[in-house]
Length: 189
Picture 1 (cartoon, rainbow, N blue to C red):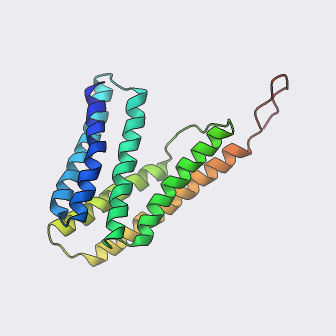
Picture 2: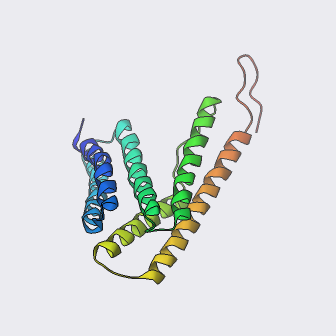
Picture 3: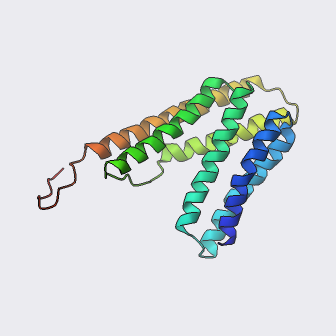
């Protein structure tokens, strides 16, 4: 176990506290905890790279931490009607589709390479910024309905675009020729 992995694990364990802070009407504390989680996310990656402490476990833990944090925040904010419920559903559905596709490909012995797409990276940044904006505006008592609406539409659009891009990648991957059975020659794509 190394420091980057410990920071990532701490981020995972911050999720229940963050959900509780949001649900108990403490958005400013939730905002600061979310900001701290963001700092540790950047710090663990920086430390892993600069100290040559990248691990396969760390890569998986980081992805779990990011998904757990964002999905939990969006679900909680959706349930409390701080964001449109449809947006929360879209965020969760996208992740379920991606995880489902990876599992199906693995189950049929056609594992997908896990490569983040550019639209997915942009989507993740937009989801983080929007969640921070909602928590911050609630916590600091700001009323910015136009910015909230525009942010929700932007995140919703990027979430759908990301889901569609992964679906296309999944379909293309699965449409490739089947792996050759033992003794068969490999067929060209």
